[in-house]
Length: 279
Image (tube, rainbow, N blue to C red; front, top):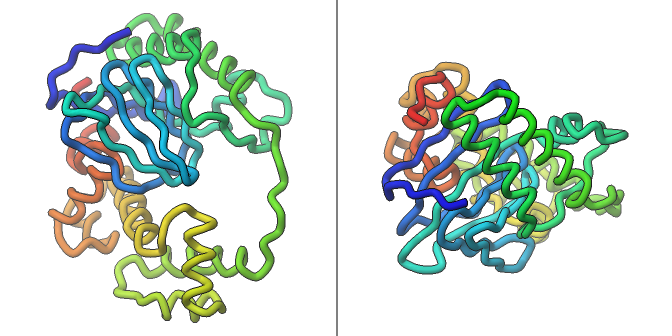
């Protein structure tokens, strides 16, 4: 299960039949900044190794490993050595995977185990599905592999749902701070502005925000801007327009942060969601 791809060979595409987006490529001298995804992310290492930071710890994923990251789980990644790494990634809503697997009470969220999953059968199912989608292979083989992946994941690598303790005023303040940032992406806002909207002293809000989300308000603002740019690109907006509307000062800043979060440029992503990506 090894991909042999050129160092510049990175592609991302939308797969409506899977209700997912897929990426494959090689990354050399590249690091993912701290970011989150709006869906779950499953990345299969097909060559090399990547060091991942999340949940206050660091992990190394190597060839054959699958790293699984929940939606809105803050994480960062960088190469272990000069050889970089190759990966095949699936971005998909966990609710869709649970429904595919026929999991009872699929409407209730259950957090992913991991982040490193070492399961040869699960890795093979993801790899087979991914290659079939890339090469437009047999639809039945693709769907069977996808179903096997969903069933294996939900059957073995989801924790039992746990109701989080009520964090009271801080929890409500963090929610208010996120809403304020989401509504002021194109503005220059200060920590005092956010704290005033959230109803907490600035220092207390800063600590509560970082503890709850795994990133600072500034990092969240960058993340939210990229997410808005993604939504605008999906709706057909031009890249320049998407950059301005999402609060980036110029196209270079949009490209820089988009690639550091997504691994591809805005142009590559635009071609993918318009169905013109080279697979």
